[in-house]
Image (tube, rainbow, N blue to C red; front, side, top):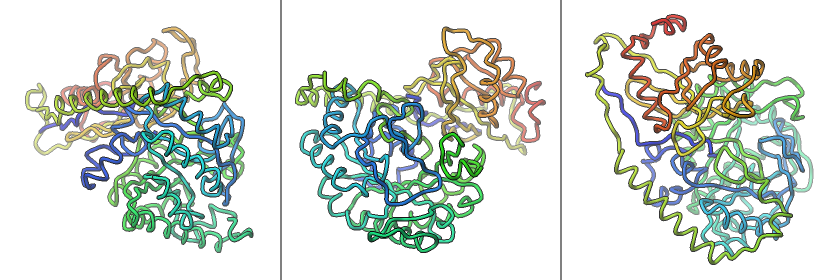
Length: 497
C-alpha cells in the first residue's frame, strides 16, 4: 500500500479555486490565466494576494441570506464594507495597495451591492485600472440579472474572470431564496422573479464562455431549501462552460439581520457542506478554499489588511506606480521561481507503507481521517493553537491527502504563549472541529490539550514548521502503525489504541 502525497500545499491562513491536479484537464491557456489568481487557484493563494473595492452600493435583487452593511469593521462576510468608494478613490486605493503589497495580483469588484447594478461606477473603475495598472488582473462578481446586457463592456475592459452566484436552476426553489428582483423598472416577486433571474444567469454564462471569459459559479448551500438541488446546478453550469464551482455555507446568525437569520433558518454543518461538495465534485472542479470575503477585503485569503489602506491613510501616501510595477514584476518572478523549484523538488512523492511495523491486513480497509491544522500561512504548520482564527481541515486516506475546507473560530488566546480558562470559547472551537480526530499546531497549552483529548481530538505539536500535507500524511502513517485506522473503531477505542 502506498500513500500518495501531492506536492507541498495546503491552504494558507494568510480566499478562493482548486488545486493544479484538479484543473489539469483545462487547456493550457486557461490554466495560465488562473496560475497567479488566488481566488481561482488553490495553489496560487499561498503566494498571491487579492483585493476588493466597494464601489457598487445598489442591488437589483433581494436575497433572503443577504444584509448589506456599510461603515462596518466588525464582520467578515460578503456585503460588508467599512468605506464606500468613488471610482477615483477606488483606483487610488488599488495603486496604493499594489505598491505596498506587491504580491497582490487581482482586483475584484463584488459589492457591497451588485457591481452590474451599478454599471457606471463599476466600469469606470475598471476603465481607469486597465489604463493605470495594466499588470493587475480584473474580476467582477454578479448575481447575473444584468449580465447579458453588459458582456460586451466586460470584454472591452479586459475582465478575464467573472463569478456568477447561481443558487438554483428551478424557479420553485428560487422563489424560496429571492423575494423580489428589480427588472425593467419594476419590482417583480415570487416564482416569476426567480424565472427571470435564472434565465438571465444562464444566458450570461453562455455569452461569457463564448467570448473566452473564465466563469466561476458560486452557490450558497441552504439546508432544506436548495441542498438537494445543488448537484443539478453543478451539472448544468458545467455543461454551459463554467470551469469551477464554489459551494459556500449559508451564514445565518441572527445578529447579521438577514431574513433567514431572523427566521431561524440554520446554516449547514461542516459534514453537510463536505458531503455536498463531494457530490458536486463528480460533475466539475470544486473550490474549497473560499473565505467568503468582505466586499472591501485586502491581502492574502483569510486575512484582511483593509485597515492599513483607509482613505485618510492613502491620502498621505506618495505612490510611484512605475517603480512599483518594476518591483512587483521582480517579486512575482521570484515567487514563480520558488514555485517551480518547489514543484521540481517535491513533485508527487510516494511513501511506501510496507516498512511500517504494523502491516495492514490484506482484507482490511483503512478509513479516512480528518485533521485540523493551525497555520499562519506559507503552507506549513506554524501557528499556536490559541492564536488560530481558523483551522484548515484535511482528509488523509490510504491513497491521498486532500484539502476539505477552512473552519473559522473565535480567538481562544488573546496574548502571550499561555491562555486563560476561556472555557466557552474553547468549547465552541471543539464543536467547530467536530469530526476531526487530530489537530496539528506549532504549540498548544495544557488546558486546551486536555479538553481536546477528552472530546476525542488528539493535539499534535510534533510536526511544527513542516509542510501541511507532509505532516498530515506522517500522522496518518503513525495512526496506521498504531492500529488506529480500522474502520470499526469507535472514538474512545482510537484514543486508547
